[in-house]
Image (cartoon, rainbow, N blue to C red; front, side):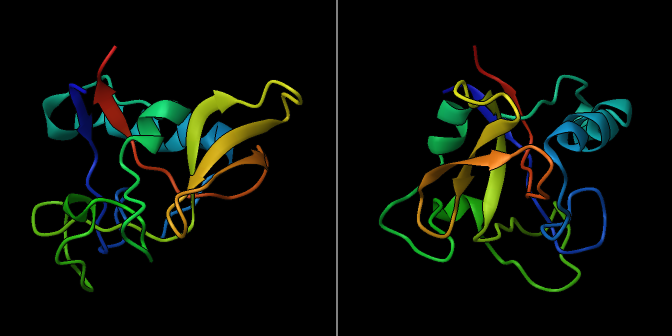
Length: 132
């Protein structure tokens, strides 16, 4: 897919797996912080679209339903250099729900389902870069 995904940690940083954001703050806070700090040497981090986010769902896994590379060695105080964490809740996509623009698509890593969520809800975010 030519996508590079942000690892999530359990260290209280901008990468912490417990951080939640409204849809607007996913861009204005999360992604803006990654880009202003040149995370991993890059300034083109973004919120993934619905299809990109669905591409890391593993329906053969549960709690979280994500491929193992996205949930390894997650323990208290681990950093993006030592682990990759995924919560089993909802994650924002950049894709707006066309029937009602006050909603956006999210992916649940509890069950791999795709759901429209009100953009004012607080939801997890995993940034991505690259792709087309």
